[in-house]
Image (tube, rainbow, N blue to C red; front, side, top):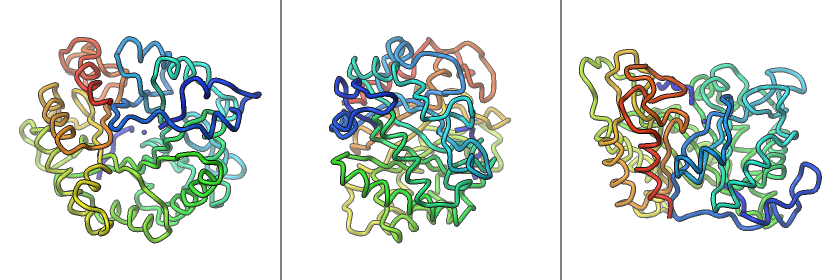
Length: 349
């Protein structure tokens, strides 16, 4: 099981027109700027910084905002969404709206990610904390309406992997929001971000996708977290590029059983990778994703026409702390600033 800290979108000019906090119906419904493939590194919203400035400096025009979670585990707070559980930053207040508009004006966009390790471990992933499927769906609708975001990422890990009722509520809420979006001509994209091993998904993780099929929730892409394997024993550095490819091949076989009507090409099109640039959380420093590993993963993703590439996280894309394990603000390896993003940005096309 993984234990990382881990977490598309609307249009350009039309999405900047707003009435109050909510975007106009035309802005929300307009077709998303969605490349065939996209590199969208995670942006840790609990750290300071400007989305548009980071995008301009790094070359990563698309960003995944991490994380959206409930304000608490009980009462009204359990069904109210915020940035990172901060009650002073409810989604309704519209933090990042102006910055997202600047990003869209340059041809970029954002993905909104729900959950993440802290929320999933602490019970504030909204499908875990909120027991009303309708209220969960309304929260998804609120985020789409306030920000014009058309791609929602569901990061499910830690305790959320074991919360069977939460898994079912999440998928049923996805069904409702997908219906809501269709009625408003919104082209919604649903992505699951899931921990993986070289042998593929474990049974709990597979249960998420099987439940999605059972409830009728459309899952457009599956993002593999190819780091924090925590394999035992890990006495020597792992080949992170090789293990990422093994993980994807294993999951591809598993998805063929879950989605038997999809052909090989369509299944590859569903898949994506998220790497943890540099040294991940494993204490032994045996899990280090270097630029050479990233090139291997990039080439594999291009060859198989995969959907999505990302890193955890854009604020780590620098060499400011050689040797540090799992830092929020630097990769732990020697590198030039934005080296991973400069390598991966050509994937967006």
